[in-house]
Length: 166
View 1 (cartoon, rainbow, N blue to C red):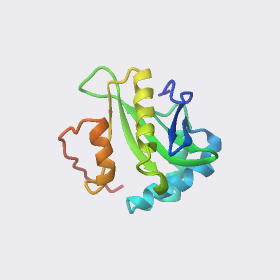
View 2: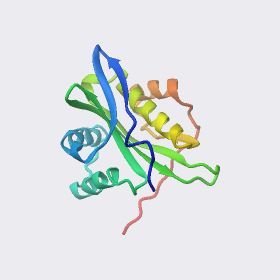
View 3: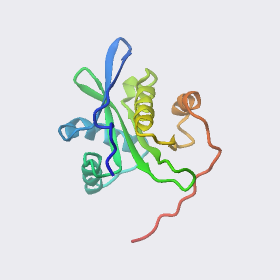
């Protein structure tokens, strides 16, 4: 499924007097994306196999896939990432957007980069006529939750999951 508009939109802001630009991922961004992706995994104490990350990268850059992403850039350095997935819902006729991954480099947390990445996803979802943007975070991620509580509503739902053996 093509996610129109996600690959062309751009947002800018000023964070700590350093311009930050949000732009969609492109195939040439792999070297900038990978350290942030690994930093995200490290933050959550997981080690996603390289072959899974390779598939993820290909999907993020395939216009036929329902997933996409963006990077936050400060000058020539990528300082944050966001991945999001468009999907159907049984509750509305319009689709939803699941913001799956959000990560900001440690030195820039609390400066507005995370908020800008989320606002980028909000804007992209609006442009596509989607009904909802939602995400999960770990209950110990208190710093991020302070931001999330200001820019979104808590649903009150608790996640349950079952890992299936293949």
